[in-house]
Image (cartoon, rainbow, N blue to C red; front, top):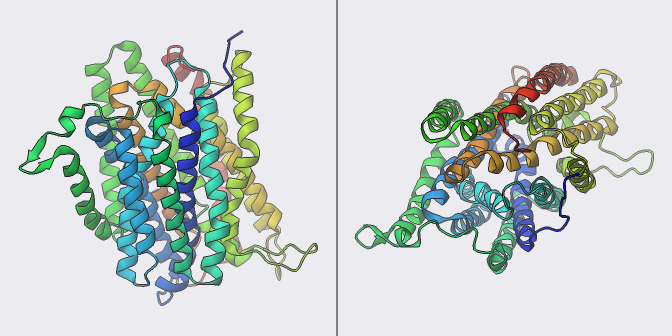
Length: 491
């Protein structure tokens, strides 16, 4: 029987709190984004929901694209700690800029958040992996605990920012998100000593070396980060171009991994790296379906779901509060899943990482069957019962717990240390591609001429998603023994 420690490094809890506040800021803004765009920014458009989905898709895709570059810069120049601080500062600026009511300033704010997230997100996740030695069975459990920090912030923020935005004004909600980001930065700064020096720059001397007269490598990265914000201010408004950029980078990153595996790695490490790339590619399926939450499910809840608590109460919850359902279930199930993985590992019965991926994709399909059924049985003069939305989010959550924290841990286990940051960035790059695809899927729920096609337009899309998820989930489960063999003992 395998011996597994139950305690975790103190640095994990520092990262837990820092990530909790950063996610408070991100999800507080995300809960309001499509609602704000459809009701205000694009209210004069022929199809405001479709326009909102396009901006939402570009923004969420780019948010997950920039970690590819932020991870590389941290690996080679800044180190994880400095990269996280830079990212947090940029994101805080973005959230506060969003408090000003002007369309182009709004896009500028999104650009600051996009670039900041590129430095923050992959590198704080990579630090978690560095806290554990190779082969430490606590790593998956540690990532699940870290993931609970993400979801505690994600649970609280739609309630606080959502209520403020829907009742006091959209930009008050966005401003509160900025306060959360500042709290996250403070938490990380004061707790850095508990990271045990595992987040420092790879070469302090190279960091201080001038790249041009009067500008060291470190400050060149800082200046470049602010300059590139302008690029993303323009790019976030170009949805078609974003699709092209993502496809190009995805193909390029796969090519790089294959080349690195065969030119720089031995047989065992090469096969492990190939498995990591395969699982990252399959994560696109999960996230493209899961990320309907902030787009089509948000508008579905607004227009077709009965958000009252009748017959218990006449009170009706704000639409943005439905964005807390997923996070609530993460908090409810996170620790049980964490202890379940540890218990199964002790008994040498833990499912392999590929099998967990297959289970996760299958469960997101179950969630969409619940949503389809709720729409299918909706009375002609009524609304979809809240229970079907709740059940949909519940199964999405159990699926997420089999994919997201496990995927983050998988990258740090299978990737060579020299390119851990790059591979973590690649994980987020393919999540970016999935978010872009999710926006295209969400667009299928809208009709022509600015009219929603009705509740069954959503229901039919949800049904198609469910069948696709079942097919992909079963396929991944079937090939999981082969992938497990190629992992050469990594669990």
